[in-house]
Amino acid sequence: CPYSLITGCTFGVLALYVWAIGILAAGQSSTMTGTYAGQFAMEGFVQIQLPQWKRILLTRSLAMGPTLLLTIFSGGVDHITGLNDFLNCVQMVQLPFAIFPILTFVSDGRVMFQFKTS
Image 1 (tube, one colour):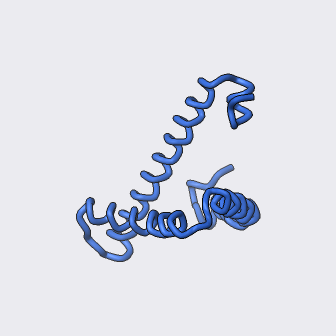
Image 2: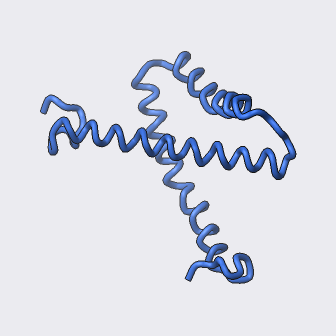
Image 3: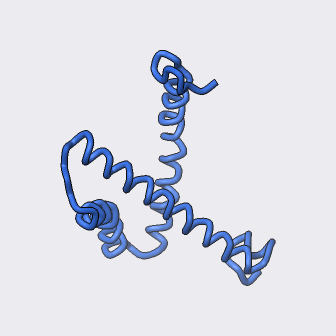
């Protein structure tokens, strides 16, 4: 198979582009959610008023800085791929520790009142 992904081998090259657009859209959605959450936290809880461009510059720099340093000073693509696999495994182990408390709190009427899940 000339394609490196199973998706491309099974469904054709068009599926690779659809997959890439989906990943890009998910990343943009995640970025917007994080940006809005950071904006509300900074303005509401911390009482820091920054212009939007400064807030975006700050948050993107905090996110991209370590990534760029790792990419520049790493041992190449193989090292980064191995690190990515390791981080995926760590996230897989950590996910239940985030999901179970959230599910517990959102289903508790004493915490969420009328907004609790059924």
